[in-house]
Length: 367
Image 1 (cartoon, one colour):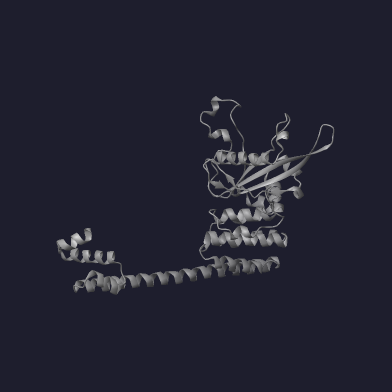
Image 2 (cartoon, helix red, strand yellow):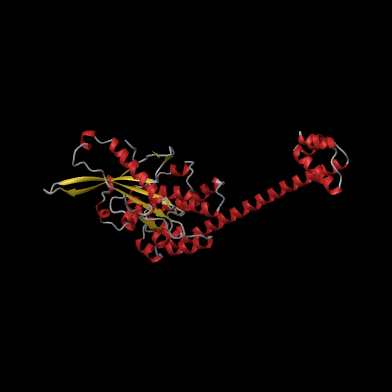
């Protein structure tokens, strides 16, 4: 059976190396908490079934699916849920269903097809755990699967919402074509006032995720701080953990993992502060982060310039030695340039002087 997660954020999601970008891992980190996942559904999905979710019966599935092209692909998040209905005689009956959530930072025109492949794999996996005699019964039904796309890109989402919109000449056919429509949660389409009214962890994340310039972060945090102080300590810690990763992805050097640790530690010290102190100290942390980034960039630029100067110095020395008639191999050894680079310099010198290369040299290079 698939393993399930607890009601905590899984810190190791950030530690895993993955082809997914940092934003994908950030959202997966936040939504690995059952409470936060339910919070997302109840705040941003307008469907009746959301009100009937039993948060204590959630199970997150850690599954990788082998797709038709034999690539192993892990869906972003798949949750198994239970709702309680009533039979015709009034007795309660539990119904299992699944929610599949895919995060996108860019528009994927083939999204309905991708989701269909995942739906089929989830059903296939479900059937492996059902008694074949039960499957053979006339009244057996597959569990519902609700596909959701969480999109945080700036351009409008233009991919088809319905599967049959991918089918050529679908208007010539009736209901016999396969069809479904996924739910779209588009971060940039919500107004600031809507997010501030929701006032929970995912609303705070959406509110800040719109930032594209460093100065915007300060302005948005000031508008958001009243919401942040109402979050639980664990939610606030998860928010700042996500924020540190987002800042690194958008504004800092992603290769310097020590900066992420520094930011996380600095943000952790803000957790217990009151509104005014939190804003003031957050801005100080932000200023220090960008100062460190500028200083690192300055040092990297100086080092690059130093290396470039050394390389140019070697080339100038090689030119002078070649002008004095030294052998190419000896020049390469003295200057630590490659033999190919020395030969290019000799060819350039001959070209500048109008000298024709000796036949033996040309033959040697051809060899």
